[in-house]
Length: 55
Image (cartoon, rainbow, N blue to C red; front, side, top):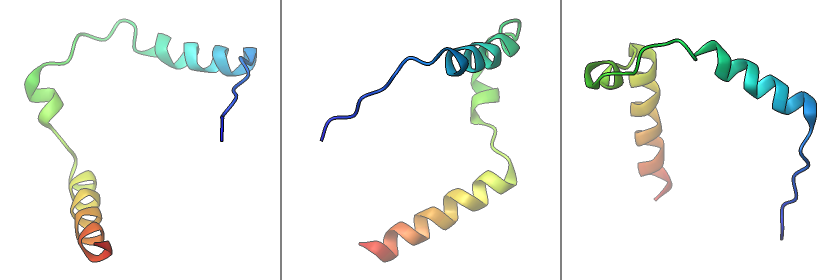
């Protein structure tokens, strides 16, 4: 199976708009990249438990 994508102007414009929102943000530091919210931690733990059940 081969996937084919069309370059659609409205999608390209939407992506560029989101990218532009972050244009002036300072680069991330190591401490910022290690932070995760409690909700994300819960989700990752839940996914870990689910993947163990599937194997």
